[in-house]
Amino acid sequence: MSRSAHPAGPRHADVLPEGHYAAPPADLNVLDPKVWARTVARGEDGVVTVAGLPVTRLAEEFGTPAYILDEADFRARARAWRTAFGDDADVFYAGKAFLSRAVVRWLAEEGLNLDVCSGGELATALSAGMPADRIAFHGNNKSAAEIERAVRAGVGRIVLDSFQEIVRVAHIAQSLGKRQRVQIRVTVGVEAHTHEFIATAHEDQKFGIPLAGGQAAEAVRRALRLDGIELIGIHSHIGSQIFDMSGFEVAAHRVVGLLKDIRDEHGVELPEIDLGGGLGIAYTSDDDPREPQEIAKALTEIVTRECRAARLQTPRISVEPGRAIVGPTAFTLYEVGTVKPLDGLRTYVSVDGGMSDNIRTALYDAEYSVALVSRASEAEPMLVRVVGKHCESGDIVVKDAFLPADLAPGDLIAVPATGAYCRSMASNYNHALRPPVVAVEGGEARVIVRRETEEDLLRLDVG
Ligand code: LLP
Image (cartoon, rainbow, N blue to C red; front, side, top):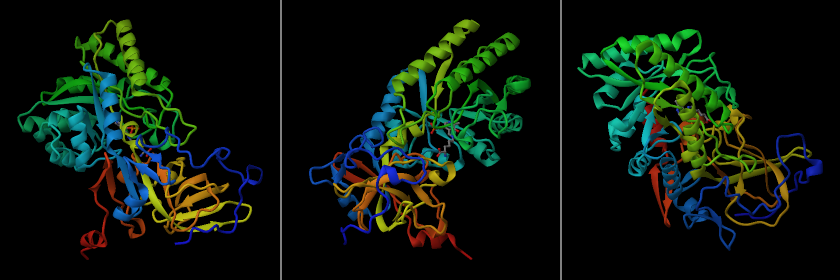
């Protein structure tokens, strides 16, 4: 396999084309711990290891592309959230970020609860033994079958998202002779500072019931009248990949305002408040995420202060981090297939995956980092765009980054912070086979979600 240098592409900051990138890092061999899973390190031979395992060995054993997930890091982050919020609050891991049966077991063992938002996620949670009363069921259009399954299973709460759903859940629960614990999801009218597609608290969108115009108050009125449901709290989720706590502050203020109105109108103090997920992680060295301890302190203080001002008992708080737990714990391992320097522009590095295993760059203009991991290199930095093997030019994994100029076919490169919303949003576009998730821990590696095969694809094709 060739390790030789290829014709030079653009390299120096003074000849870089317009783009959205910082200056090349001082040393491309250094891995910023902010964006890499905790046990990732570069060995003395230059090969990057995770949980003590060289990526070259992982690639040989499991193939590429592959998501490599650091189990100890996942458990440590889950535990950090759990500990930060303590016994007076609940942490629900948002399964949409990434869910598998192993993940469910780790969460159950670490004392977390689970937020699911589809029948498929619910089935995964139940099949891996998550106690139903630790599951919250979300979604803006749950089917009657999904609701029935959740109620029968005894999920801890269903988060109601519309007027129709209030009646639907109450009716289904009553017909099963049950009283389902529910929360009502409200939109608080906050413009979260994040990409439009992942902001969820402004009013002009599909989720929740607006506080504005008294709609949420009316939803509460109706919910309190129905026998099949027990209203236990109000839910707000303002968006995703958020760094600024001010959105949560406004949300808490408005949700507590509703709790106060409910107390004044109905003489009822709802016991729970859920502030959703959405805390950001570092995708590049420029991002500065907050620690769970700091987030827990800030959120608890906000809610306590608002409740004191409204003369309410402080409700039990819950949060739903997804990305902040699993995001940083995994990286995607790719093999370089072609390296194509375009004079005066940049060098295109094609890998053996692409938008089918990471749609986030194409969908949200997301930024990622990348590193050469199968060896160290002292070559100078070259500006690259890491692209996939799909049939469209928007198939970009990393838009602008630097890799060593001697990068060659056969090298392994890795994109960190791909634990959240990559495997869970992966597709079979161009009949790509979705990559496996390999969990590594204490020098051992095991597949927790296997690679798709052509047989898997053909099994669905029954025409
Ligand atoms: N709770 C609710 C009700 C949610 O809708 C979400 C995310 C979360 C919690 C978890 O948010 P997190 O802590 O993971 O940010 N596909 C997009 C993100 C969509 C998030 C949808 N809801 C992305 O790749 O950035």
